[in-house]
Amino acid sequence: MSNCDCGDNPTDDLISIKDAKKILFDNASLIDDSEIVSIKNTTGRILSESLIAKISVPSFDNSAMDGFAFAFDGITDNNKKIPISNRIPAGKNPAKLDPNTVARIFTGACIPEGADTVIKQESCQYDNDNLIIKDMPKKCANVRYAGEDFKEQDVLIKQGAIIKPQDQGIAASTGNSNLKVKRKIKIAIFSTGDELLDLDEKISHGKIYDSNRYTLMGLLDNPAIEVIDLGKIKDDYNETKNTLIQAAKICDLILTSGGVSVGEEDYIKQAIMDNGKLNLWRIKIRPGKPLAFGRINNTPIIGIPGNPVSLFITFLIFVKPYIFHSLGATDFKQRSYKIPATFACHKLDKREEYIRARAVINNKGILELHSFNTRSSGVLTSTTWADGLAKIPPNQTHTINDLVDFMPFYGIL
Image (cartoon, rainbow, N blue to C red; front, side, top):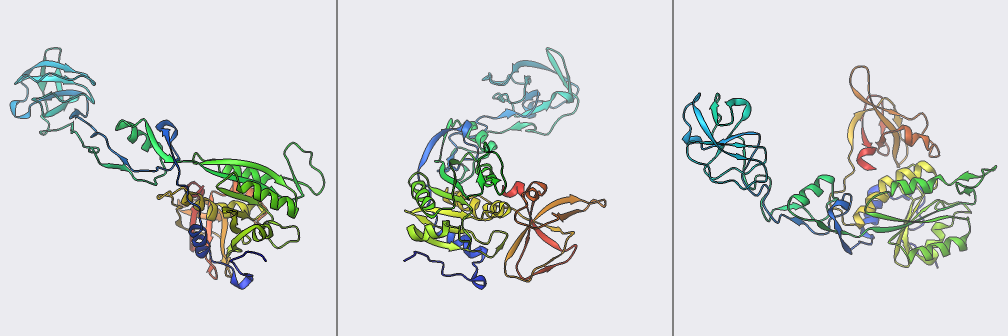
């Protein structure tokens, strides 16, 4: 008896995108293990525990610019010569400032005891010994105070953050040489199809090169991910079953390309049902309806449709959010913006459609969306032409100049 929680799922009972994501997230295997990594290698990794400031930054009052430090209340007259009693470069611990004198000071240098204000060098005249103030600044001007950026024990980066380059700088500024991050998620991938050729094989009639696997590897090229490439397999039930069972032993997630539709040579869905559990199959999305999700020996598997565009879009809409949910990322967001479209869309079915689109500034200086000249799910060039996806809800008609939700690739890739 097959093991399937998704029912027969006829055309009228396709699963909504919202419900499909809930099934994916509710059944995700979370990565709990962590590792200590040098901060120079942490961009793109997921922070396992919140980063707490070990010191205040800055840790001392310092000058915001090159100029002269002095006690504001001790200098009352402009155009009066004032002795220069000290020179303070950055990194020096200065002596106390003598009364009624100024100290030559440079950006980032420590404000000496006895001073509370810095005048920028452009607002005065000076030589090696004396200073004449031409334009008196406000009291406490040009001083950066201790703790102005953050204070000791402040939470700097929250647990679950996807570490950005500027986060590395924050970590370094408080004296952290290492960060605790989630270990990389191990993802095994393979393609299915008798028609597929490796790149070192000669093309022949009826054959195609295995482009999907390389698209997947590019989409998975991320510091938080380790890819295990299992190559391509034939359209054969036993080979499919055995590959899935072996993959489940060595990874945290299996991703397959092809073999999830209803054809006689599509074996992924059946192999999952016979050797594990199928939680999800066929979704209200165009393109990409026959996406499957289940488990083989408790290892999650997502079967991605084999059409190149379907693979690309379903990865962005379902697989990538699933991966970062599994890693405990709390700030993973896919952004969209309302932009007027130059194309019409008359939707008569219940599937949400994702159209390859490009945002263009027209000759009136207005940003607008253009769609690719075909919506076929087999035209991979549409994904290189486009710079995002236009989301069209089910059962809605859009006319030219209607506002459409646009998901730029830079916000979802």
